[in-house]
Image (cartoon, rainbow, N blue to C red; front, side, top):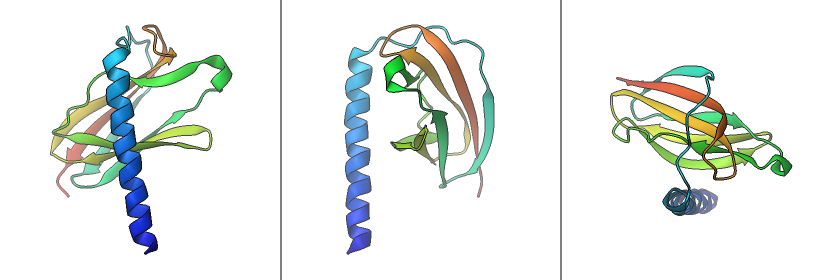
Length: 127
């Protein structure tokens, strides 16, 4: 019973995240030019889940992490996100062999200017 409840919760969170993400991308301007930032290199076996963690900012600053470029969904697909302690954690599934780059820009709300950026270069390999 408990596993079923957790599964329903995870599905509900994923569905809500998808709805919110599609609504945000429909109205938000794209993220502008990205400043230099760290590049995290990851190798993930196909079929596995992996996550990226972005440091949360105080809500008083108005700074938020936004996806800056589309992810190759033949390689990795986003599943859900959550605030965990002082981080925003985003979970992906490695669905196909290849490489994709997951890029986030730190903007003030849904504005164009990026104040920081982080890139995750993900290579999905044979398990």
